[in-house]
Length: 296
Ligand SMILES: Nc1nc2c(ncn2[C@@H]2O[C@H](COP(=O)(O)OP(=O)(O)OP(=O)(O)O)[C@@H](O)[C@H]2O)c(=O)[nH]1
Image (cartoon, rainbow, N blue to C red; front, side, top):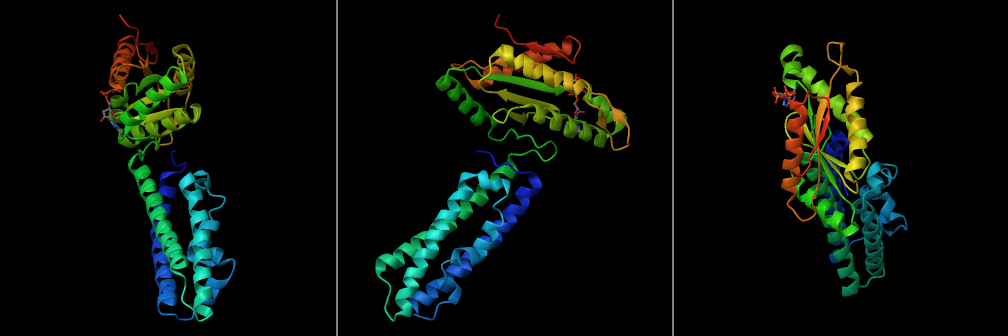
């Protein structure tokens, strides 16, 4: 499941997680010391709401309204952390009563602490992965991992017996925009054009920055005739989108599209090549249009 986060939020979360992991390890060390050396435990750790008071708890429960809440790996943290605090309390109770914790109680506490650490690291890696697979300019996915994801869509298409379409989209006369209005103007076109395009797609559609000003749109569960309707909405919308340039001026733009249905038994690379052939035809036939790849 992709993380529903903006790039800046991803960056902040990565840093927050580093702090939380360090705080968890410091807490773990202190608690382990209380158990092994039979020292008085910090009073907070005996409280029934210890899981809320810890640095992790304070960080986690302030994120309750955060979009990350929908992410399964984030939800799993709460369960493990609460169980870990319960296990710590049981082991500490033995110490307070002048006994040694049962090995099972101690093992349970250690296992849960290590599991929480592993889960926090895994979440951090997922978030960093997301950072690497998101294009900072447009917010679209990068090509890293694209073929793997398209193959997954192909497998799903076979499973659910619904076609999947691939579309290559390329902004028209983009070199001219850069050359005549400057590179920041070109960047503004890409940023605003793709924001608009992303806004028209469903949440299970995906879009990758395929090259400089070329993007690949994947429309799962969509037959060709429906895909044409979606892409036409994008084409027409872009042709009417007033792009605001850094100079304050407004620019009219357009894009060309090559559409192909993914064959369920052929490599996904073939569908991309077919969409590319259709895109070349769209450019040759005057731009600002959609061409559909048809088998000879
Ligand atoms: N501003 C900006 N320009 C980019 C970026 N990536 C690629 N480009 C430029 O996009 C231009 C693409 O030009 P061409 O491939 O000649 O295509 P075109 O001018 O759009 O012409 P047609 O596709 O035939 O309509 C090149 O000048 C690239 O340097 C980017 O991230 N920002």
